[in-house]
Image 1 (tube, rainbow, N blue to C red):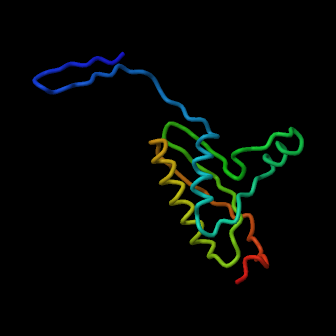
Image 2 (cartoon, rainbow, N blue to C red):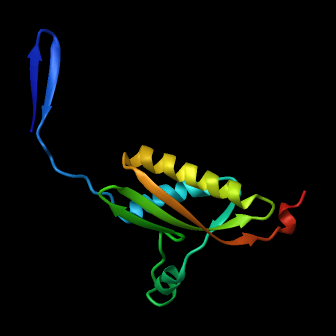
Image 3 (cartoon, rainbow, N blue to C red):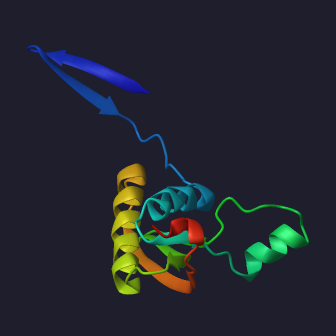
Length: 132
């Protein structure tokens, strides 16, 4: 319940405790994926064995392929599995991913990002279409 008190042209809002807001791991992963895929040098996300089992045996496609989320009271940690485009410096791309994920998730959820662990799974080969 929200109560308003007006005192000398000053409005004070009193909120009672309404409870906690919980954001699912999948929503956190989608925020991270958005930041990752807008990072220059990222070719694609790479799913681990868990994603392969889900797709092949259970027939379910994971919306958070390539991103694993761990949440606790202190904040959120991410494990990101990526394939980097050929010709980009891996440490630079990894640093950019970490910065982008941290900025995106913290601005969207107002929660602290404790870690963004990057696992480079490979380098994408140059395509004939990519050459100029």
